[in-house]
Image 1: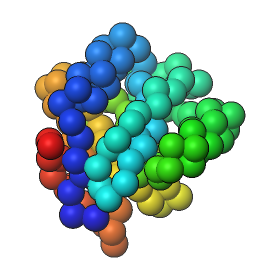
Image 2 (image 1 turned 90 degrees about the vertical axis):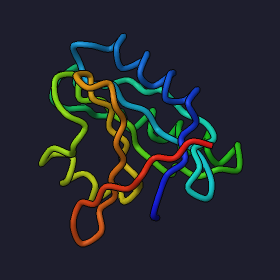
Image 3 (image 1 turned 180 degrees about the vertical axis):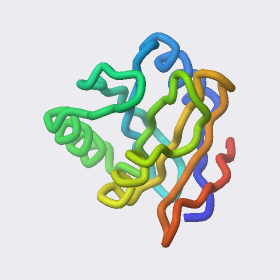
Image 4 (image 1 turned 30 degrees about the horizontal axis):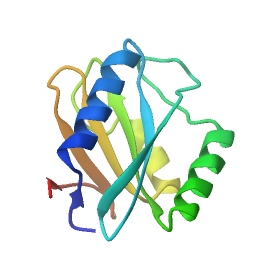
Length: 130
């Protein structure tokens, strides 16, 4: 995957959700096709932590079923870094290995979105709007 397409309306929803979840990290599943986000599923961070996030198994299963019912795939994982830059932490990098989808991170400091994939190493890819 060379880029991810994320509409402005989804960015607005995700940034508002992230601001509302402060001081904790927020998280969501991104549904879509062909590198384009077509729907989002806001999930609960069961860790309630400002430095980590975990989506419950129940919500993961629900999310994958929702994507299937919508004839889409889970193409990305979103989370926020309320107090730091939008760059994968060591924990993020570890979980990127078991979840090889695009990871979009929102910075609560800079209010920006950045997307990453794990190739042989963590690589940033552009976020485009359609």
